[in-house]
Length: 178
Image (cartoon, rainbow, N blue to C red):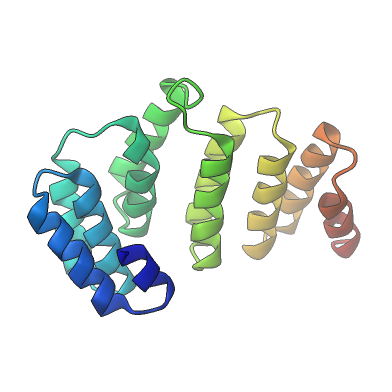
C-alpha cells in the first residue's frame, strides 16, 4: 500500500504506512528499506540514511540486495554499493535468482529519476552478469546516450546489435546518432 501511495505522489501517506510497518516489524530489513525509500522520495536524506543504516545492520536474504544497491547508490554510500555490486557478481546473481529483468528494471528506475551515472553502474553490472543479453547492452547504450556520452552509447548499441541483429531500437538509435 505504501508503494501505491508513492506512485500517486502521496509521499506523507506512504511514509505513514511504511512507518507503521516498521513499528510492527522492527527487525524487518524490508520494512526499514521501504521507510528509507519513502523519506528519500521526500528528499529527506537524513531520515533516509537513518533507516537505511538500521536496515543494513539486519541480516538479509539475497532478495533484498537490489533494493540495498539502489538505496546505497542514491544515498551516495559508494563503499557499500561497490561491495554489494561486487558480491552480486561474485555470488552469481543467476544462482541467487536475481534475474536480468530485475537488474534492468532497477537501472531504468534510476535513469528515469535522473540518476544517470548510478543507472550506468547497474547496467554495467547487468552486462557482466548477463553478457549474452542484448537488452542489457541496449539499456546501457541508452543510459550513456542520456548521459551525453555518444561514443560509449554507440559502442553498446552496436554490441546489442551483435547479440540480436533484429533489435530495432538499437538500429534506430545508431541512425539518430550519425
